[in-house]
Amino acid sequence: MSTITKQVVFIAKDETIEELKALLKMMVTPSKAEDGCLFYEISQLKEKRNEFLVVESWRDEKALDGHKASAHYAEYKSKFEPYCASKYSNELEVL
Image (cartoon, rainbow, N blue to C red):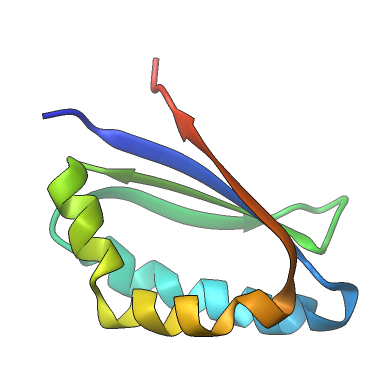
């Protein structure tokens, strides 16, 4: 089994920064409580207030799949697009 670590970058539309921030913040507590979650944090850039970074680490693919099947993930997926100007992710290798 291999640990999965990702960085997801969200760039909010200028008029929806607070809405995206609230939506992302609601993901933290339930995600951290999930089986197989090793790390889950969201940060907002100080210099670019419309940019958010999510860094998440999961025990394995099964744990990540469980996260993607959760109710809070479904809520996030159904709501984030109108708030985002851009979103991209990078898979990370922890050294």
